[in-house]
Length: 153
Image (cartoon, rainbow, N blue to C red; front, side, top):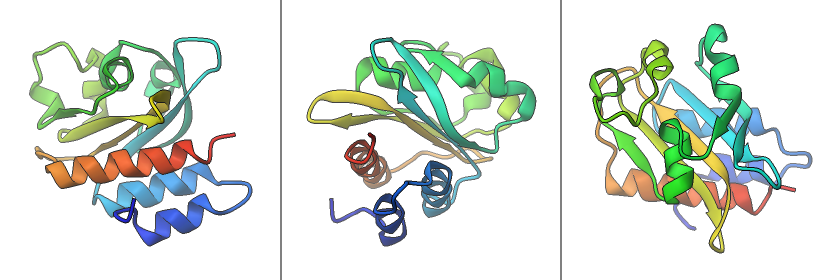
C-alpha cells in the first residue's frame, strides 16, 4: 500500500471521514476532472452514491443508485476488476450507459472497492480527453480503494 498518496492517507485518518474530500483528492492525484464514489448498500446489489465531482445535476438521479452489473461502476463491481475506457464517448461495447456520454468525459476508469475478497463499492475517475490509464495508475486506484474499504463503517 505504499503507493497511496500521502494527502489521501491523511484524509482517510480523519474522524469522521469527509468522503467528498477523499474523492476530490483522488481525482486530483490522477489529474482527472470527474469522479464518483459509490458504497454497496448492505444486503442489496445496489451501489449508492457517496460522493461525486463533475457529474451534471441532471444526471445525479441516474448515478444515485446503480445496480451491480449496470454501467461501468456496476460492471466493475460485478467482475470485481477495474473497467477502463479510452474514450467513453465512442464506446460501442455497451458497458457505458447512454446517459454516461452526457458527462462529456472520455478517458474513464471504474474500480471496485475490495478488501479481503469482499466488495464494498466502487470508485470512478475520468478525464475530459481520450486516455489510456497505465497499469500503475490502475494498481494505485485499486490500492486507494482498498484503503477506503478499511475505513468504511
